[in-house]
Length: 77
Image (cartoon, one colour):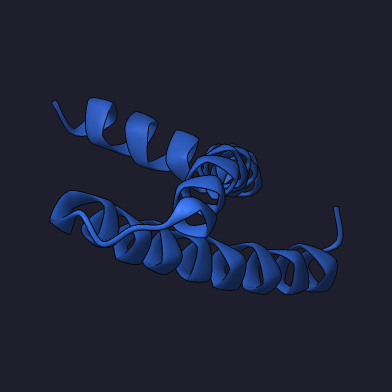
């Protein structure tokens, strides 16, 4: 994948990941306080799946960096 394309995709994925996490946290707090309505419950459950998919996409897009960090730290030992 071209670096510019990967960077653009990471910006989108990371932005959506942040927004999804923020909404998850907000609806989770509403559910915990007993103030959540049906919309909050539905939103929380549906965005939970989206959050998992975005995390997987984030890991896939950053896998070369993750791999480099793992092998760099094992080479120092």
